[in-house]
Length: 296
Image (cartoon, rainbow, N blue to C red):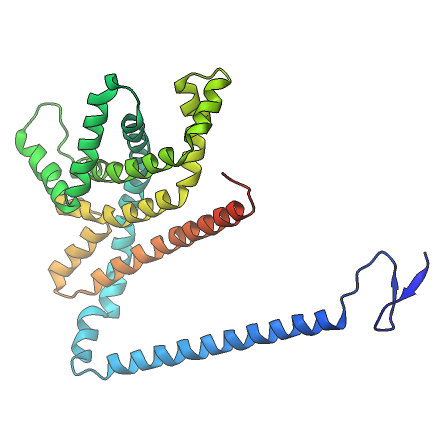
């Protein structure tokens, strides 16, 4: 193969690409600016952290606050018990998350059914979402966890874990149903009409054409709802279930030191951050695909 001379006077093959000197300088400038921006961000973050630390530790009540909320002794005592209780929160998240997605999808489909014959079903679905979205979750939990056992119904469980999970499912399915409904209604009617013109029934068009697009578009808000559900599983402790929050509360009641609450909070944060970052990654990925025309 014949060798040619590029603008820099270096030998290169005719098929390879050699960037110009101007492009090399431009890339070098971009890297310099990126390093400078990173350095400035690191320095400003460090300065802010130092200032906040000095403000907190110089407060008159800091010694007492440190002893009450940041005791290493009680943190070591609480951590294994809080971690053991967290397993209940994780199980509630998994079971309630699946139940919420299924029930929310059914409610959303019921709200989008067409025809006057389905009006009662649409009305009941709308009433359900309006009621449970307006009812505070803590009140819903108290009604279900404390009220259902008071009825003494034969064959109805009194387990606070099951009752608390039911209350969580009832509330969050109303929110998820609206997310699904927004996704279904965002699909252009021409998609359904095209499916019907190909011979698909209304049920088949909904299953194979509308729902796949609706669910794909609503993945980020659905993940956000699951993140919120993960945090709210700690509220089942009001019924006496020994989860991470209740485990911390037991130690606090015995020691009158609030460090276990800090431990429980940090454990929930550590569990939530990966889910939040995953949600951000999925959102950014879908935005890139949508910008490139990869998804509808």
